[in-house]
Amino acid sequence: MKTTGLIKWVAATLLGLTGLGAMAPAHADIDCHMRFNLSGWSVFYKTATGSGTITCNNGQSMHVHIRAKGGGLTFGKTEVDDGHGAFTGVYNIREVLGHYATAEAHAGASASADSQVLTKGNVSLALSGKGRGWNLGIAFGAFIIEP
Image (cartoon, rainbow, N blue to C red; front, side):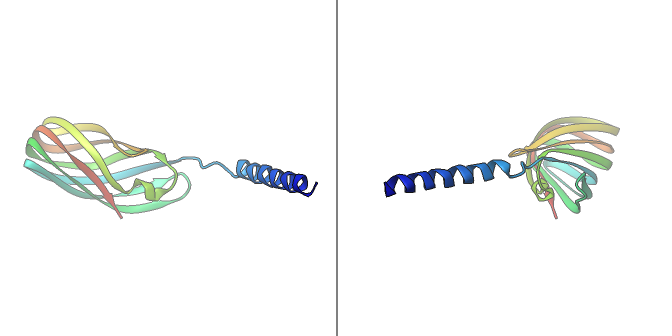
């Protein structure tokens, strides 16, 4: 008889804990955007540096340093002013930091526009911007966002 009472107590406790877990609020992804400037060059090796500001709809914001690096068959010099980025899959602003994989084919002279979608795990970043310079080639590498 005592064993049955213990089983009922354990079952009720487990159901109660399961119910508490179900009542916990679900994490919702937040809407984060980045404005940035970036400039660099490439001769087989591609490198660029810049800075930006990330703002999210939950009130968080962060100033960031940006680096792009990679290699391939690529030549040129570019500068992006007033670039824009939109993040998806973000639950906390700190998740936007890190290395995003890139692959691109590019060609441009004088004024140009470009857009790319980059990924880092569950986080994606859509970049767009207008710039100037000249470039030609195919490159693979990383787009790095640091605090």
